[in-house]
Length: 71
Image 1: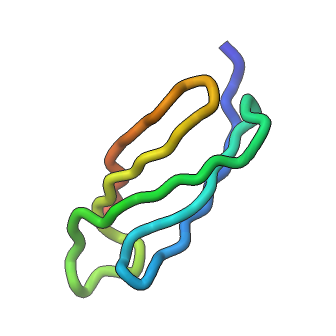
Image 2: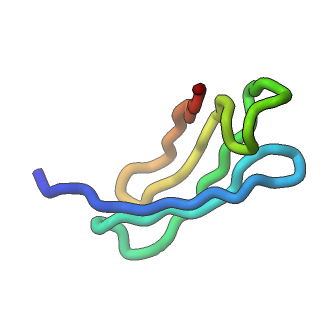
């Protein structure tokens, strides 16, 4: 199996959700990814919390997962 090398970025929206793009060495293009804020503590830093993320890949269909960062 080949190593997967990729990158992604997110931008925090005014509604505290995330939008962004990702790509990897097996993709021929960039893909849109979004993540809806599930919950976070009011005093946490901008991105710290739990998000429900969805994205689509050309060879793998639709995907979803939970992104979480807690300190």
